[in-house]
Length: 113
Image (cartoon, rainbow, N blue to C red; front, side):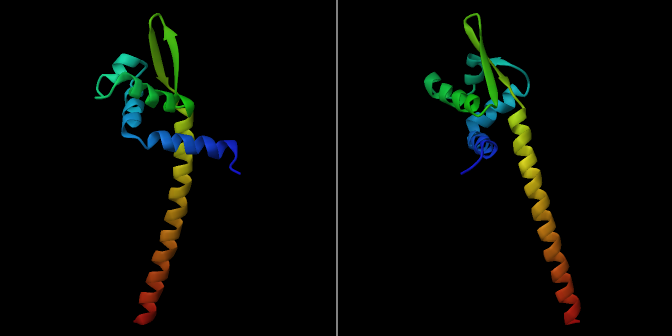
């Protein structure tokens, strides 16, 4: 059974798998924003857009709070750092494997001559 960290990472990657949610993350990287501002560039009904915000909030990528009559969203970078760490580990693993393949192919070529 997956542990909590694996489940959290799965939720982050699932959330980042959608272009609307990635656009929201990109926008929130510039600073906090109200729902209306976040929804404005997307051509969808507000209830549909709110589902995207809920997915981002569920995985911890954003937080929200009520300020007067508006709900303000903020980016939470910690889950992105965990995803970046995982991707860096995978990159290192594959680079090592490709280096091994390169060495093997060079040895094969040298043994042919």
